[in-house]
Amino acid sequence: MREQPIGVFDSGLGGLTVLQALTDLLPDEDLIYLGDTARYPYGERSLPELETIALAVAGHLVDGGVKLLVVACNSATAAALPALRAAFDVPVVGVIEPGVRAAASASRTGRAVVIATRATVASGIYETTAERLEAGVQLRSVACPGFVELVEAGRTSGPAVTAEVRERLAPLLTARIDTLVLGCTHFPLLARPISEVVGREVTLVSSADETAFEVRDLLDRVGWLREPGARPAARRFLTTGDPVTFARLGGRFLGTPLGAVEPVTIPGLGETPRGARAGGRARGTRTSRAAS
Ligand code: DGL
Image (tube, rainbow, N blue to C red; front, top):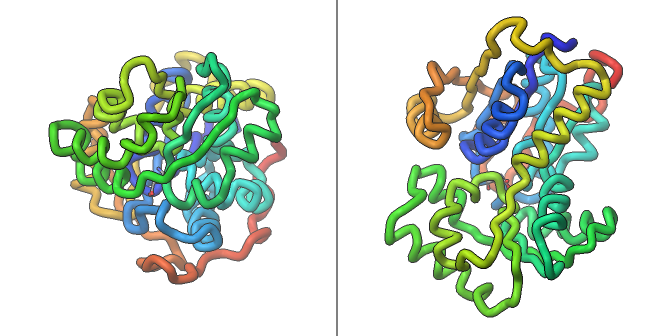
């Protein structure tokens, strides 16, 4: 099992922020990343629809033999983490608990706002998770529709982007918070304009690093960490969208060429227009791969 790759997925490019943290912390691990660009933005979909999509996309990675799955998407984590854990026998790590922990350790006053997609905000997952973990931080979630589209279009800086970000975040500027949680994995790619708007005294927090630590600890516990330096680690990139655009923007965000991005289709999902109930494999049909 230890030689198998870690699977990571998101609705598109945002999960690359988590992939980068995994690469930095676990340089010996093989990583396979799936950007489900054909169905982004996830955050504008209903939670049941997202659960169906997440099960099918994750199923593609599990069928490919990953040893652990990282749901590098807040919306999919909010909608589907329990269903994914029930459906697959590999360990599944989401980004919400790590995000709450990161917020708790960053905030001095205990007052923080989470900016996220509409789906994540509708789920109330940050508030309930902070309560369940007794994290000692009061979280309020605010939706920022439009931010994901900026990132997927490769628009992450410049005066027009800052103006759009300012318009959306203006209502937050009067709230006395010391921490802003980037509760969507796309948002760290907008960190510069966001920081410019909210001011440097507000700490921006993302779940990427905490998630990578959780993955390392989990693999360490089950003895599935790869031997350091045994062979060079490999990264593969898959997308359900346009591989050329994904390679161009992904390479820009990671600061290194991605190599050939492989096009994939997810069986049963088709184009899955927003609002439609996606098809896909029923829960609990996964065969056992390994004890975790
Ligand atoms: N990056 C994802 C998240 O963390 C989803 C963005 C989207 O497709 O709406 O929520």
